[in-house]
Image 1 (cartoon, rainbow, N blue to C red):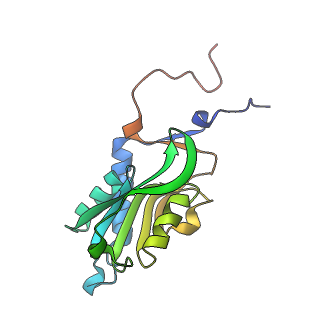
Image 2 (image 1 turned 30 degrees about the vertical axis):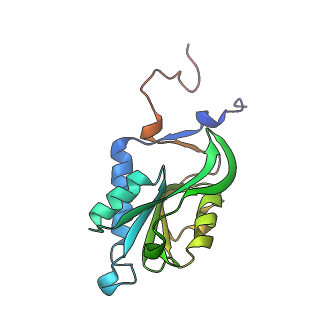
Image 3 (image 1 turned 180 degrees about the vertical axis):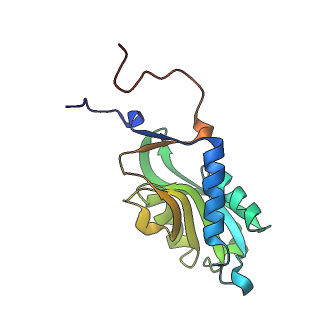
Length: 169
């Protein structure tokens, strides 16, 4: 029987190249799906902090020049807390979310997106990665991982030696 693993031991490590490729794939999936003429989106809103990189890549790929942010805090280190908005996007731009593409890196429990969806119910919610508990909260995503997987994004990492999974001889 395998020993019980700590959260970081069942990790999905994402490189800068991988987040770029997956964010481009998200843009391709969203291309032409907006409500505007030709399926265009009015704006992209990135959920900070993790959604900033994918939001920038999606906005570049889809040639969307209006980009804003919404800051939601739902984690303190690796501990989940109640989601709260700490910075709202431009109110007259967002309205009820019609024509707005809201992007995040990951939907985990779904609490962050659930909060933002209540504020902007007509927005389209897209994430690069999704876990089963939160998947229902997003309209579009690229890759699903198991609920007990911890995703390590490149902005959280430093290079260092890692012991082999089965230990050393």
